[in-house]
Length: 143
Image (cartoon, rainbow, N blue to C red; front, side):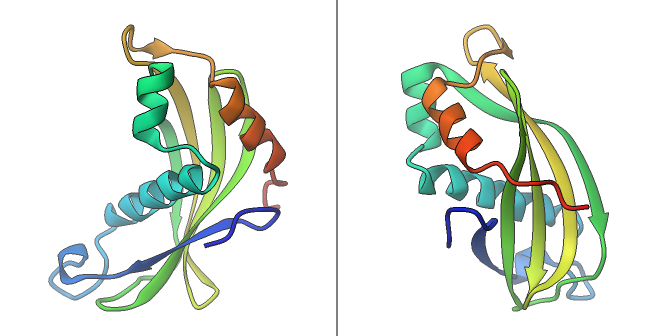
């Protein structure tokens, strides 16, 4: 796992439960890999999601996901899910995410998340400390 100017990388292994009858990763499971990578990305920056919820009363929810499926992953393969923040607003941010095998991009997504006030279930400002960390790691969107 890395943090910095490069995308954050989180290792994933494909288990039987992730695949369909043909041994190919079921398309919706890529979203699970990306979710895990975003959680670990925040943790690598010092933000445990449970603590953020307790301390700030907010949670992050996916508002939009644009996904391109380029090639399949199969049973037992070792993959990497990446996170690269590309946009930051007051209550939302966007990340480009990939799932890769040996440097080959299998899935590419643009995921937009919104910060939600847990009491009111309405958009809320991203806590300042988290926004500052996100801002410092913003990357250029891929062309």
